[in-house]
Length: 139
Image (cartoon, rainbow, N blue to C red):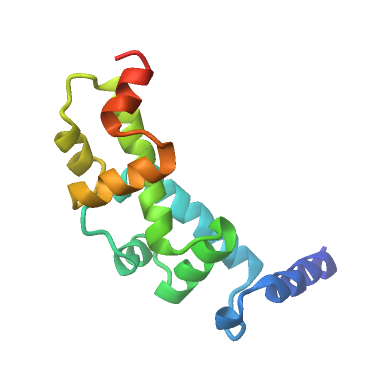
């Protein structure tokens, strides 16, 4: 088994982007960080409007650069793109499940800081405005 884990670790280092080549992290630690990140994000941490990579790293008790590497490698995006994904999915859920909630309430409760950023990202991802999205789903 040890030989297999060494082989996986070798493959892992070969797939690591150049900026992480010198980062010392075992495959076990990498997947532990990934699991902790996912658990914490499911708890709603992404709703904190000013959440940054340092706060997430502290929440998972891991070094900032390791958390960044895990997000980059496993989700193929940077921290901000990844965070927007969580917030956008929450906003879409709220649009459908909370039809009485205003768009502005949904924007801020899903973690966005700016209405213009929200509208831009939402339209880019769905090709609809939030009102069109809500209307096209039966509300």
